[in-house]
Structure formats: structure tokens, C-alpha cells
Length: 205
Image (tube, rainbow, N blue to C red):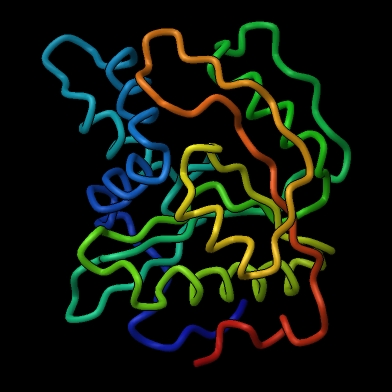
């Protein structure tokens, strides 16, 4: 367990609404598109997202999240976890939207995977993304992973520049499958950053 310096802290279940908003920002609207298809009668897509964030298990769970909450308001979030050392076969019923993402994940087994990294628009360009990447590196080190990995849409140029500046390099690509989701991006880009000794304390201010 690593120590976090305020305003960074571990997420709690009551952060579910903020986590749903931030994961949708990171996913460029894809999460909301998927939640809409999962919603029960009378249930909104946002309620589905919040419900999933409140789960104790699963990749998108509050238990896997670190948030930045200056003055008590969540403005940024990191959600991540170690990937299995041995890639898992893709389930036959996996929706086509997810298949390229899972294919890319399977190319970097044993890495610490950044599922979500998002900062609210009004707080961008203030160093929160870099700081949370530092947290990811420290969590990866603590988990004895050799690298941090993530997938970003090729059209998200600001995020790709940030990751490149933080030492990530492109490792592979897969075409985006849209199926009703509106996006200008053509490819999902897998990026990876190998860890170094200094990452053991990367989350410290």
C-alpha cells in the first residue's frame, strides 16, 4: 500500500458519480454509449455507470481508483490494476466494441494497466495528469510490475502528447469498432512505459 499526499486519496463508494463522469471523459463518450444499452426501463445511463463504479469487483471499481479532490471536490481520477501474467482468451460473447481493446491488453500481460486517467476540463494543464501518472508508476512498482500500459484513441492528441512526455511509447494499434458510437478516431493505440528505480517514489510531491 502506497501513501498518498492530499489532495490525492483512495476513492470511496460515494465517489461513484464523479468516477462515472470521469471515465466517460476518458473514454470519449464510449462508456455512456455502452451504459445506455445496459440500462433497465426507467434507469438512466449515468445510473448504470454509477452502479458499476460502486461495485467492489471489476476493473471499473472504486477499489481500483485514486482521486484528486482539492477542497473536497473530485477533479481527476486514475483507475488501474495489474493485468494477468498470462493473457486470458477473449470470451466468445465479448461485444465487438471491446474486442480491439482486449486484444491490445493481451499484448502487455503482467503490466499495470491504466484503465482510466481523466481530469475535468477546467483543471487541465495544471499538472494533475502527470501527478496521477506518477501514482500509477508507484502502484506498478509496489505490485512488482515491470511496466505501465494504457490504451488511448489516436484522435486524442492532447492525451497522447502527455503520455509521450511521461515516457510512454506506442506498442501496437487496433482499428476502432464503433457500432453506433460516434468518434473521429480510427485506431486504439497501446502505449507502454517501462519502470525505473525512481518510480518507487513517483507519487510523492
